[in-house]
Image (cartoon, rainbow, N blue to C red):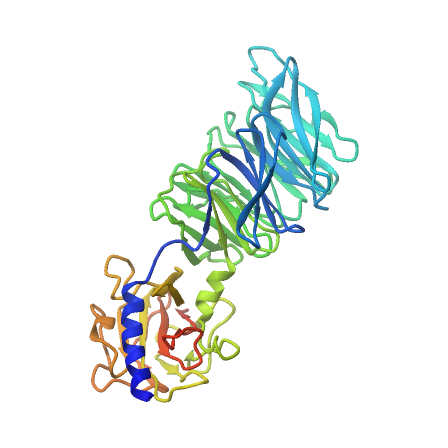
Length: 502
């Protein structure tokens, strides 16, 4: 039996690594004429507006499309849901004579009410259909309209569905906005950001005091995506292939779209060069990358109501991204699961077996050491054994943060945060590798083996000669033989550790 398990592990790890699939963890929702989307936390749904006038509904639990809300409008654009989850408010390209429209959907009855408001048909202004909408915490929503010049910003009273004009906004020349102004709100709905593309003016709205403030004249058009942090203290804009924050500091090449997490000080951006979603820690004084998720297809820079539209669920679990193929929905909890590993998952609670000294790190699996400190790696056997256990441990330079599933024979054995030596076409490759006796040398190809002969026997505690300077970081993760694994190969992926020298 012991020999059979050993053979299963050696074959299993080789097959698993060779067939590791680095595709995205997201589910593709094939709605190609999608415009905007918003999550409904009370029902576990994602609502998607479309150019053909329906609101599509995607069920997060079943990962399937439900019957759409048909006939909501003509050609829909922006959407927002009320804080109580009772209604959707949707903008529409349609106009009739001198009227434009906002569509209100009662989510209980699924009936649509049309809210009409007058527009200025002066050909010099070219005012047309409604464009963007955001709902505040004070029972008011703001609506921008399409137009060639200066147009009014509409205020919608949610208690009466009466539309008025706000005349106290800080316009550059007049109390108006440029046509097709973007409106973003914070997760707590207390603040909004209004971005006038043509005039290059941005300003904020405080829903608690019902005032507009903090106008900035950029004299340039960002013409991309906007996002506001959960409490409204920060915002981000995309411009071309990059993005900037509210201090006009460059964030990085995140021009493929931006969105803030409603539960944490985290910004999600899309890197159009690597086709990945990048999570940035916005709460730290020095912003750091937390993790990356492969989108699964080629993406470009963001465009209004097109590629790059992003939304995040109120609980911070789900992220939706508009792509050329439709909408991809990602379960962000899988990233944490990938770093947690799945040792012992078939026998009981998932167990950490990889440590730096006595530590497995913080909530993000980060262990901080003073620069120059040498450190011991501790690898325990899985709770169900065997002891000793076969394993392959990789150490990447930097903070490896992908989610790469290990798949063999159609079964997923777990996921790794970085590519392995048997995935030579992917980067970054590990710089160090430690393997147990009987594990093929190909598992460490291209990486230095500091303990090649004899191979350390797990469980073990070994010193690593990496006294790195402050500012450097490394990532560790392991595949280990596990009698308590949740698969027939008896192979599990351990917890990952991000080792950060400070």
